[in-house]
Length: 451
Image (cartoon, rainbow, N blue to C red; front, side, top):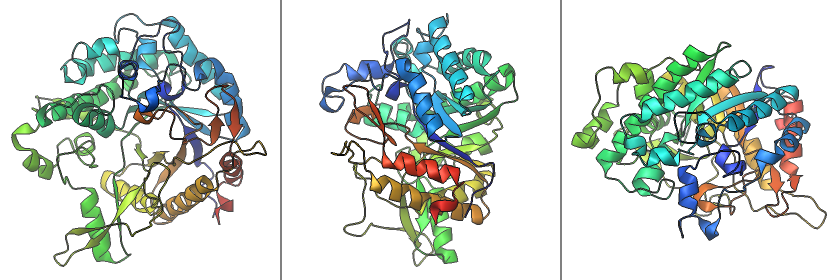
């Protein structure tokens, strides 16, 4: 069952979730620093001020990655660590940290996949309107240029935005993530449009500034509908469900992908949203629709769909007692077969699974080890399903497990443990879990040991 010889086996993390050093070496504040200071916003008052202290312990963390045999590591850059005011003068100490991190990864034989934005928006730019400011896309392009000019002699793989569905939807509509706003729908969609423009302009900036030929992608949420059976009718219904706009929320694949690939918003979304749909300026869609090299997608779960009597999708509720992870996401390995397949069919780009994993109830056992059989089982099931997608003809280039280590899980603080490496947040001791050793063997066998 071996995967292709050039398959990329990786793990992922994000700057605010692991770096810490929130106020050190000239770093500016982010909206997450702001939100963490507000009582009741983050579980148990936790903050990302120290997190995994990766800023000071990156060498130890790279050694862990190397010992696990990782071929690649997906990291993100902290925008306010590089540009403390969000724009203007760059912070040399911040850039130097990423220099050291990239150099250390390469020395360990690990390919860096760099995400430019994983939610730590600069506080100073939030004060100027954040993603609602029509200049926000230019701010982001300027930041992208600074990073690419510095790192692109060693970095080839770039992602622009991580999950705009979340940082716009949960951050600007529902208000549970930074910056904690509950805007009207028209304003939410306008912020989303500006984020799409930021994506497009940053792709232009990457291609203009890169010193080595870049491979550019994007990492949205994969909201997966999978067929209840292999019947053609159910498959068609699941495909329709996956590429429809159902409601006034952003958790649909097409609103943040069709503009990029087809240079237009989906018709059903425009009809549903009516006058709230964002104004599209002349040339906006040409900017947004920059050619990409791959489709990155973060997939954790899916929903089963069957064809109704009229052929339209009918959602099948999960059965009573259906398996769930520690944070109550449903375990649906089918999502990694059908999600990549439908996305590949529609958008015709190679796919990377840029995140997949689970929160588990992990602690150090009496024997000093961390036993997480659920993570091993979950990952094995999902990788088998991903391999099935590849057998179905999907061009899947790599898989990044979320996460390399336990970290700050946004509004849930340190309650949720997604890592393959256990982190004691008091002592900062790292303990590779059983799943880390298992994943090392998966990588060493190139997936052959999954059956």
